[in-house]
Amino acid sequence: MLALSVQEGDYITIGDDIVIQIYAQKGKLTRIAIDAPREMPVVRSKLVEEQGATPECMKRFRSSKP
Image 1 (spheres, helix red, strand yellow):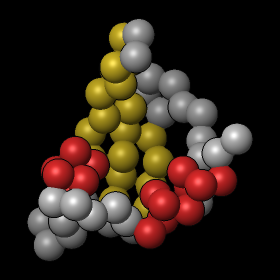
Image 2 (cartoon, one colour):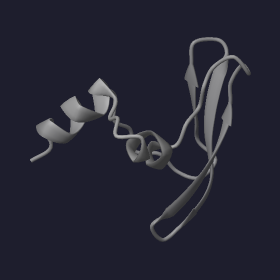
Image 3 (cartoon, one colour):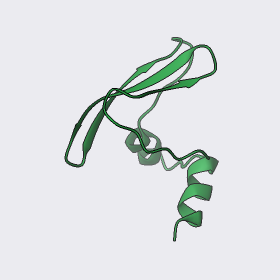
């Protein structure tokens, strides 16, 4: 997993089709914009975890934190 420090206005690209932009930061709240193809599902963690699921990448990330 890649972990980055970003500032307002920064953006991250994933492949040629996905852009994630940080467009506002206030205290603990960060607002992002995601531009991805419609066929690419984009789901908030709250919704995934409400269904009792946790993606494998997040399980690895959480277990590696000090």
